[in-house]
Amino acid sequence: MLTRVKIDNNKMIRANIVSVVLLMHAIVGFPFHARGLSMTYYMMNCPFAEQIVKNSVNNALRADPTLAAGLIRMLFHDCFIEGCDASILLDSTKDNTAEKDSPANLSLRGYEIIDDAKEKIEDRCPGVVSCADIIAMAARDAVFWAGGPYYDIPKGRFDGKRSKIEDTRNLPSPFLNASELIQTFGQRGFTPQDIVALSGAHTLGVARCSSFKARLTVPDSSMDSTFANTLSKTCSAGDNAEQPFDATRNDFDNAYFNALQRKSGVLFSDQTLFNTPRTRNLVNGYALNQARFFFDFQQAMRKMSNLDVKLGSQGEIRQNCRIIN
Image (cartoon, rainbow, N blue to C red):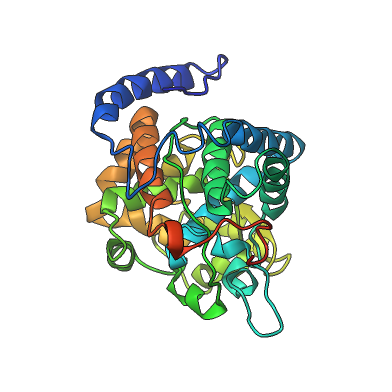
């Protein structure tokens, strides 16, 4: 199992060494053939697929490292609605408003990376690799590129034929408390540990003022006063002003959990994980042990990327990720 090691960071080295050990203990028990998916799905009919996706991701992130957060968020916003079926990629038509045009999805980024990978794959092996698989692989590669753990995922997802704006109402709100998050994610099979680990993806990227300004209207004892002033200053530039989730916005690490311990979580749905006894120990554990966070995160991401996948006649292999065949 591969991990990305930053040789100038002793903490990262130790974390990744421990992560490898943990993974080797767990790898035997992981279901490689999950619901008809397979780790070797493209070995015979498109053996270069994963390398092509990796190249597209790496080239894009070298030019703009902030896109790593976009690719991870894209996977979540795709999978949590109708399952991991690339419905988030479909464009709206005159008769249908698609998921991507929902207010919750207007800030999604990285579509051009998926398009680039798909175009190059179609040149080599047309009609074989699904857009849904490309999203899952691209998110995985973005995590690794940013310094996080590498994890393999089974392939074989088919692309869905439905994408409706009304379905996005099921996306979790940034205003949910821990109990509401546990209930919402629990309905999709995720544990509190999965929730906290997946929230750690906020070690990358930013939040817009519109998603946290409500916390600034009344005194909030769960927020550090100096940090509250920082958020207020950010919002003085308007609802679209951006605030990094932690001090290392382009590095995949455990700084996000350290921020929660300091009462410096940007979103209410972030800080509630530390404020709530049921999830606080998980936050503290990940803040103390980055290797443990990496291990639990990749397990949760595998679960996310296998959510309600479509197989065979349930879907199709799109020629263009933005339109149904």
